[in-house]
Image (cartoon, rainbow, N blue to C red; front, side, top):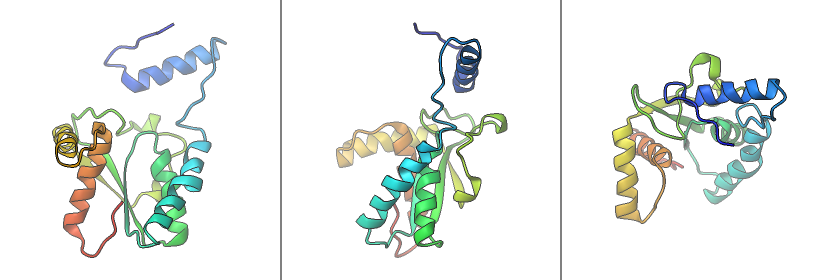
Length: 168
């Protein structure tokens, strides 16, 4: 059964509905926003892979912030290896709707999110993310969504600020 929420309710409304249904005994909520295995998977997998593949030379990690599992887990791993690695989160600019990137209202911030894991956030507009997705397809043959493109756009902003960096 597919149950829709209104556009105005959005992701928050969908989460509220799922919790309500669970509380009524009408299902379970696996809850990627609160499941510690979400960031743990990135601590054990993604972080070590990035460290290994850059030969430990990574200076910046840029990630879209959706459930926040990726940025939290990768940050924990990278900073355990080198506390100087800068962790940059991509968040949508005011009025932008970028699936996969969220600016969570305070009452909906994922429980797995550790704000101390992120050194700074950069706002990306929907237009910039969409244009970057087209550019990645056109110039690189990479067909990704606009949340990945938003992270790439953010990484390019960081690249303009630093020299001799390894930005992932």
